[in-house]
Amino acid sequence: MLTFKAVFVIAVAFLLLIAGLFRNSVSVLAVTHLKPSCKSKRIDVLFLVVIGFFWLYAVLVTDSYDISNYRYAYVFRIAHSKEMLFDMIQFFFHDAGWSFDSFKLLWVTIVSLLLYSGIRNYSRAPGVVAALALVTVLTAFITQMRSAMVEAVFLNAFPLLYSGKKRDRFLYLGIILLCTQIHLISCAFLPFFFLRTKENVRIKKAFYVIVAVLTILAVFSSSIAYITISRLLTMLPMASDSLNRILGYFNGEGTHFRYAVFLICKHLLMFFLTDQACSFQLSYVTSEKDKRELKMIRKANTLMLAFLPITVLSASFERLFSCFAIIQYAMVFSAGKQRLALRKNTYLKQSLQSVMVIGMLMITFVELYFSSSDLVRVLNSIQWVF
Image (cartoon, rainbow, N blue to C red):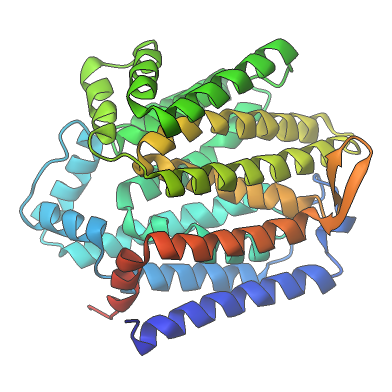
């Protein structure tokens, strides 16, 4: 049963989303009239309010399955094994006399600032993008502290891959390798380093076939999929102990059939809408910088499909989609009111934006059904602890 303050938080979040959608539709700076290179320099008040609300929400949440584990590890000075950087940070503040809530306050503040700068990197309508993210994916950024940090860092580091400078690409690699010492799940962002803007149709088709086969196997024959994916992971340049730690996520965490099908539909929808949005924008941009950005995001959007069979095997990897969902939202809103193309010359009357917003809200309500108990625990734990 939700408390009054929990209902109030939910109501404010949806009011911010409604305000964002309304502002996006009537503003003279509507993204339909902006080219990707013409980002507004005006301060988006709604964006600041949404990020501020997220920060306050994150600070006031005091309990969840993950937060209770972090609190226990912090109070009793328990290490997270191979993630030495996070251990060094939490031990430093623990030994300095900081309480867990004070440490979490600092951590949440850094994550919020990274989200603020990251969303501004991609979006011409950051207020509505942040508002939609607030009611869909940002709860994970509150409860999963370590993965929230590395995902927020990735959001800011990804533009280094399409800056056009070789040194920036290696800077991205260094940042992600450093993030693996906060959470090993950052290893999933290493393959992005090998993305190039050039398109290879044969490789792309082969990739689709491999992902489709692995996803089907993951749904109907998880043991075969686990063996196949583990062998593919062994081909990556990582230490054996890190590999074993990642494979450990699959032990006893199989995703049940209904939720697996739901996740597949959810991520295929966002893949399709984002691909459409990038394709539309590539048809009219002239700047080489903008073309590199859109092509790289489009390639990364395709690469994200590789996480589908892994997520079906273990729902823990669903968090990998959280930060990229923000980029997907930004791309769809940047495409304006472009209609949804089903085939080359066949269009639906609905716009990319409307399909995405309606679809993501419906998906969010379904997710509430699958994970209602922990979400209720999160919302009911809201309180001021200082």
